[in-house]
Image (cartoon, rainbow, N blue to C red; front, side):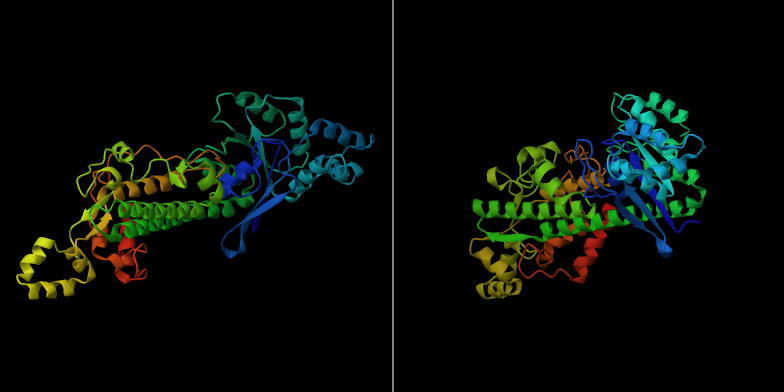
Length: 452
């Protein structure tokens, strides 16, 4: 049984070797991906640790660019009177002067493959079968290493899958799977690792352990993402400002604060799922100034999800923020009844603090409307689900799926989230925040479990 499994990713230039690795290790920052050949110049490695000091090491190698000339050169080096096997041929080549000159890049690939336990040969199935690919495969086959062929870009319409399978069979490679690095199938990883285990039986235990760890990592990531969303919802739900009912500037300021809090949640989710932070948020996400195009406080965006605007003060610039006439959970009318006389009223005001005094001075408690919080929760949930299923080789803009009808869209907050309305100190957007309050943390966990 192997303690360390070494896997070399090999193939022609610009076939998606680095993209495949990004998808497998779930990190969009690994290596450099450009739409031109020869992007990877050196062998790069990444280690996936397992228990008991076991590990899997992937090696991303440069592209094989001149296999036709290399094949002829290797054959010219061979002594006429000797019959040599494949490894002897490659050893002679690696000891020759041209391994450090003309075929410097190809020598790096061959040297790493010989040091590895197994190779993954990546194929761009859109490419027609050319003589250079035949020579390339013949050279790699001389390594005497088990080889798994991965057909990349299978999601494209124009492809030559049948022709590639024929060529692979001719050179003795029969272990073949389809795995589009940008749009991998749901069971793609499992089939890839199972295929490797069949090729290299001693690696089965370590590959099975890695598959089990992938499930564990996915669950942990999902739970962490739910906590990010839950804390965001608590912050926005418990957030309030004291303002006069017609103070539009106060409402606009509040909207901007909530938008910034949403952006922080988006950034935290991208970071958690290891997507390129700067690239995704500043360049390719469909955002307006760091926000998704569908603005939280945009009436058209709310109509898009068929939200029922049944609560709060909704018109013009005030969309998305409701003037809550309740201060500390008691209405003005109720407070008047309780007070009865001025003396009693002042005692009531003293009991309920500055918010009640502000209310009697013509101010109200301004809070974010339920339907906006529902929209915010939906957007973050669908972003999380998108990241859960998104390949790290996918460089296209992250887009949210079409929102389906649900209780959230109807403007109804779950009971455990509504509780936050009564605890202003739960929100990091208010002064005097108590982030580590036990009830706050318990409510966040409860909401996260509901999301899960």
